[in-house]
Length: 396
Image (cartoon, rainbow, N blue to C red):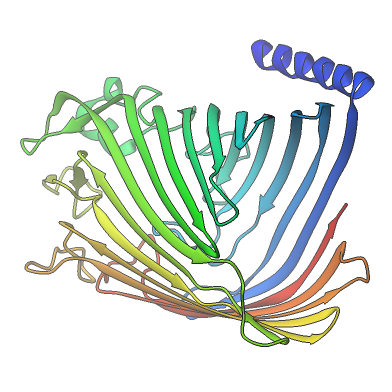
């Protein structure tokens, strides 16, 4: 804690120096939405999403400029996009970014430092600061952007993050192997990021690779003991999207396609009943490997100069490569692989101010998710629901 306070004090002194001796431009953004979600299973609830951003750019010389950015965000209960997350889950996040840009001819170098701390509450019995999935991230990255010509632009990025889960423990491992197997740090990992982006005319192509090398977590073998091999997760993601395409003076659309593949050498410890004295544990290899296809096709209709109506259909298919689905009694269904399908259809009305700094929105979303995973005692897999509310945004 002391080292963290020293870092923030030094950062504040540096920013004061930049402010005193440089040209600067402030930045502020505020986003607030309030809505109600009504799922087909479980209870309805109210949800709040809030983000507050403050920052500024500093220009010391023509080819040098720096950027400071801080965000505080809160996301309340509601529908979740990630599998294995409860509707009641809520998060508070702090994000700090310091970035320096250096322009040299057709090259732009971006050096960035980032710090993040997320507080999670997965249930009402968890207090803020003691969440099982609270995590802290400290990282640095270097991005090189090369403008080949007016039609072709290439970016490449290399980054490193140290990811720490200070409160994470495994209750199941504690029962099975003893408390020595659940020491803190099991989810701590070194994350390496390699990104390549190419923009040709209106077309954007991105290839992103994330490699997570776990520091303490070892791989569970088929015999039910931990090997000397450390867990390693690799995620490969390809995405394509064009710039907003103009169909007419009043209609625009911007499709987005993403293909994601995750590979993990970690196995899953399956226990049919969490009464470990009457249930025999089973180790399932390659349980976390999957391929995910995501596609969205937003349409924007300009009603007036300051008013738009957006229709955003989204489709997502997740196919697990080795994981079998389970029936209502938590038994694996043989000769099948788990698949999750999700459809989201959103309708958003936006009213902009004359200077476009503020936006008032009314939105409605319909969620529909199906899966051949039928065991839903802890997490929902098959449900539909409605989500509607209002949103206010202001940017300066």
